[in-house]
Length: 230
Image (tube, rainbow, N blue to C red):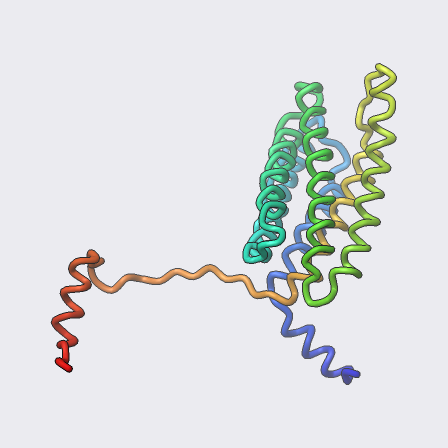
């Protein structure tokens, strides 16, 4: 059993990448909370800025998740497909954030559909990946949490889809959008559980001098390392 001070030291040594899912979810939630309406300036401008930044932050989380699982052969197809699926959700967020409903209601609503349904598919894909990979033996616990969140999102969207089969037009009310968005953000924040075991870095190195061709490299090595006759 860890001593309390050991727990503090362990938390201080967590990977900075674990903070990105928490920060992106918190930033998005705070932005939606502060912006009461998005149909008139200046609220619409602030709303667009929040959505744009949030979309890029969430896509960064998705990219780190892809990098984290890139070497796992058993989920390689799901891992790549997840990035492709979320790219549609990313595009939907940009449409929703930059095209107010008052300007083009149909396009803004289509952006919301793309965001929510592509996001739902991504959540289920990540839930399956979590259970299959079982990182650090935490897959069962984290997977169960993601199953519950994915089911909650599915139920919410099912109540939205059902009236569409009754041939009635359905508008995504702000209250409905708020609930679904919060569920998505909680789901994305769970990536911090697995990111804390990994360190992500961008490496940039400078080449010394001009690059050598293959033939030049072989010639240089032959001149510096003389052959020894047996």
